Image (cartoon, rainbow over all chains, first blue to last red; front, top):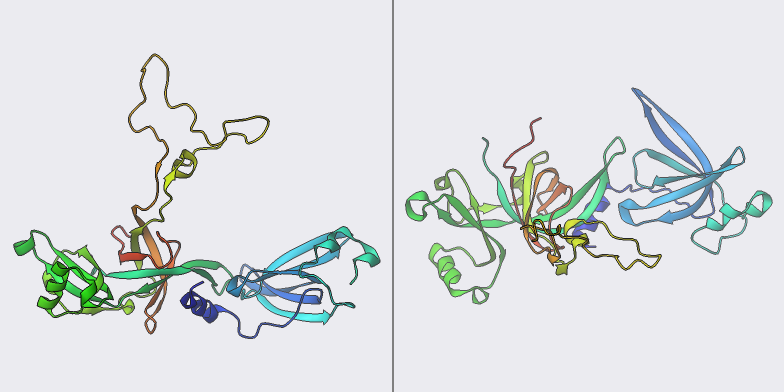
Length: 112
Length: 214
């Protein structure tokens, strides 16, 4: 990519990107507008992947809701992603960048 | 009709940014200008009214002689790229005037013209958007064009039948793109949407001829 394009991207990127990594259990505060009201909807789960570069970087959070796996992908630099707080890290550092194998597992085996 | 703005630019690439409400705006970054007026065409002398501007400074020795002499005559430096823009009244422009990216401002609606990427001799799928045949179960009709006409009547193929052809490397204009941002220091324009041609391709930008009705 051209350096001019990268510079432009930088202007729009968040400067204080919260630091978290794959395997962390995080709480994502997502801004929701309902008509005139604004509220923050938290989404708690495990980060299973990062994807993309620069302003297009996204991350995917996976959690189990009522026995069903739910994944949400957030644009890291979106103004609607207000905050990402790490609740706790993995017990063992994951050895891969994408934790898709967790989808096949359940219960204790799905823990890192 | 407001004043017509025009400029030459280089395509630098695409990116995106977020609006306050979270919507994503896809933009193309253009390195626009600086451009210098190198000639003014008037109806009295040339039979039409236009302004010629130069972009990308060049050494005089790299410019063909007819252009080199023209540059020497009007005292401007030499340019690699020259383009003319039709204007209603060219007499209000003066040779040597410089235009920069700050000519445009956010919210302007522009047409962007350039040469599309060359795709060589392309089949009907790429060139005309035909559908493809099945790729398995023994099908041999994968990217074939299909039937091109009828039988005994009319017993010929109609003119204009779309077939494989040389595709791309053509002059293309994308109309009514919105300028989303201007960086006067670095001479950059952010235009919403895509523009023709490869990165570093030369583009012509002008105020939209048919601006959308608000």
